Image (cartoon, rainbow, N blue to C red; front, side):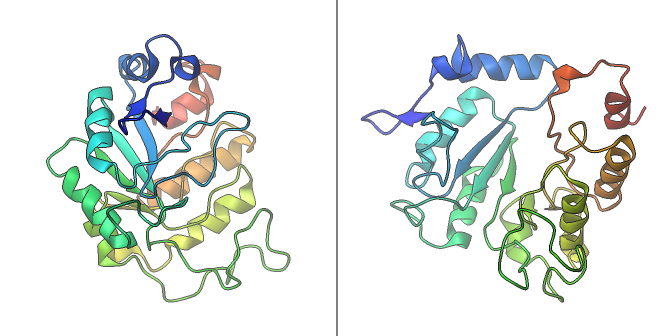
Length: 245
């Protein structure tokens, strides 16, 4: 998605097919699913799809215009990242100001607001993200102790990321679930700590899938499916698990 000279997003039908995002949204809703969209509070993104300049322009400084477009698309879930450049775009500089503004814009709208990384991530002892398991103790003492989700996390979003990006590996599932320790007091109906999406249905074993799903359930974590559902039949173990059949 890119912007035209008037500052509005242009719907690239070559990327999303005939009918663009609107048609995609209709297909998703017809399947009984919710339609989510990603943007950043910064002016540009920190990454994009390989060999395709998609999503390089973000919402920093264009929040009002973007919200109108998201509403026209029927967006049910909006994930706002703190990733990229522009320091909040033309209007907003601080992380809390960005999320506070989005919360105000979405007030009264039937849209779930996800805070991807504005001041709610757990602090890691070595300050680094993990691409592979820590060398020594894989799961203990990775995050600093005594952390919790600040009141602003729950005040300005329905859910907020507390961990690094999950990997499709069992060690990563255990690592991310530990980021919830000490955060239960601010979670409740309509507001959730988010240790990232579910990776069930990909490369984990069946037992790991069930354990992963169970951990997210018992901790009241958001159940965001991170696999291609079209690969599974209605009678598959994965679909039965997701539907609690």
